[in-house]
Amino acid sequence: MFDTALTAADLVFLAKGAGMTLLVTAIAVVLGTILGILFGVFRYQVGPWWTAPLTFVLDVFRSIPLLIQLVLANAFMGMVLRWQLSGFTVACGVLTMYTAAYCAEIVRGGIEAVPMTTRRAARSLGLSWGQDMVNIVMPLATRVALPSWIGLALGVMKDSALVYVVQVTELLKSTQILITRLQEPLFLLLICGAFYFLISFPLARLGGYLERRWSHD
Amino acid sequence: MFGYTFQWKQALARLPQMLDGALVTLQIALLSMALGILLAILLTVFRRSGSRILNAIATAWVEIARNTPALFQIYMAHFGVASFGIHLSPFTSLLIGITFNNAGYLAENFRGALKAIPDTQARAGRSLGMTPLQSFRYVVMPQMLRIAFLPMTNQMVWAILMTSLGVTVGMNTDLYGVTQDLNALTFRTFELFALAAVIFYLMTKTVQFGARLIAARMFRY
Image (cartoon, rainbow over all chains, first blue to last red):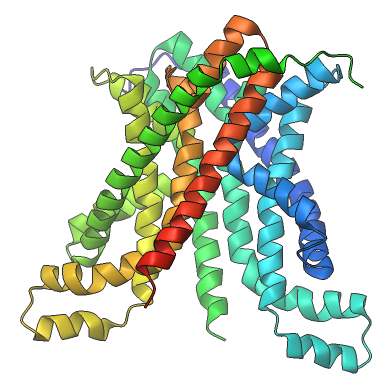
């Protein structure tokens, strides 16, 4: 098992794949979180009736396999609209919406966890809606939402393994390419799995720690 | 509106084949859920057993299942075990991969549910003369499954969505695999996958609705 044909160039190739995984994840999580906060606040503020279309669209993103979302978005952009988008753009776009769909739920849960009395107290002290949102709701909601948000970000990183379907060579795809050439599936897959694990595990632990620490007071 | 002519009829003509695929998808999801729940209960027992080895096995399982991509787990179940000379069919690999994933996530859900059950429950069972295992089986477990019912529903939805990954190990009888094969035949990519998306959406909604009915019926008191 330790006798391998893996060369330094192959390791660089793998590292590039890992970089792509992290890049796609970072873009999707940052943009998706911004969108998710907007959607979540909007849904909470406007109420369930008028935001039903938005709720439905976000629900669709959570009820359809990511693989199909990617293929559909790619086919729609390429075949129907005939836009020349790179697979990278499509992957980032779809993953952003996917993140936003889950993030909106987390944000809504966070806002709902802030007691109404606290917010009314803030408003009766003369704070505007915006001040109340930024100074009262945001700090309290973050405590509730952050552990789930960490879980979401890690989930997106793991799900970004599917963007190979729009020709983005991320970590798992580059591993597969190397497997085809070197015929050492177990060894290469273990390297790949270890990479995901080493990023995901400490952050998941941090999320669990924050959840425990913040749930007591 | 678009410079593209939609051929919905061609896709709809393939609907029966896709529905057959949907049945296979449901079959895999249900099987992996049933096995996953059993394994998750086993892992929960392992973690509570006090044995260091059993605890280590269960913890390793849960952490690997939760911290690596599902696609990676399915690859391991297919290409990984092939290194040991074990060649599994795509169906078996997919089932093993999803079951492994389900068991890990469910075990963590069960652990969360157990926190909500007071220790006195298990001790009351013990003082009635039950063995530790009996008190877990007849007193704690029913409450645990009840608390974890909603997360279990979510996991079932995940299992349905995860079946689409089977195509990467050569599965071509599930909904995604069938759709991809039809796509290779007809090149109506958008129409076919849109139809598959609708079927997936209906399946997940049916599962969620059904779970709500079951919960209303089972947890009335």
